[in-house]
Length: 66
Image 1 (cartoon, one colour):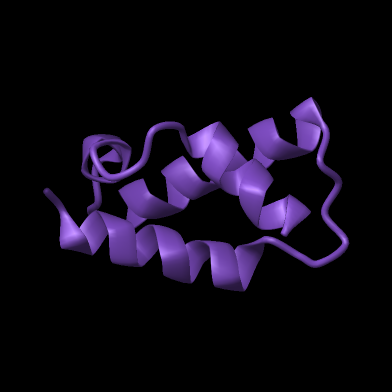
Image 2: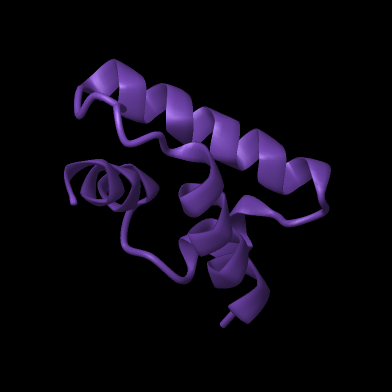
């Protein structure tokens, strides 16, 4: 398990998912791609995040809805 990946995910969502984000497929997809690119830029592989959550799309969608 990657605590580093999970911590990055939570921090990234807090800093990058605006309260005004739309809960549509395109918005969630764009945020997911940005998350993956930002993780890669700091040396975190997608696998480190994927092993911690069932689905990045669902996790970001849940952050938008809640």
